[in-house]
Image (cartoon, rainbow, N blue to C red; front, side, top):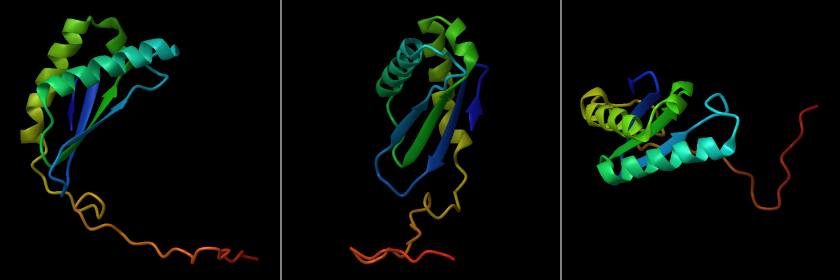
Length: 118
């Protein structure tokens, strides 16, 4: 995990060959959806231009102070944090879903109603 006062980035290694990115901009950042969506679009464009890391899932969390920054400052901060990810995320995850070993759950047969507890 790498962080700044305006952005937190979590990176998890996966068994996938492609990289994925997710963006979280909660109502604590702004109550206006227009502002939250603008921030998400800016972050998405920065990550698309920077490129994803193969075999890595990254999640970008925006913090409330991001609304006070200019677009250039957001880009500079995000690029700096993204370039720090490979060194911060070298740990191998032992979480069953992240390590590629999915946990199988038994599913009821189609049409079957699960039993109710009394």
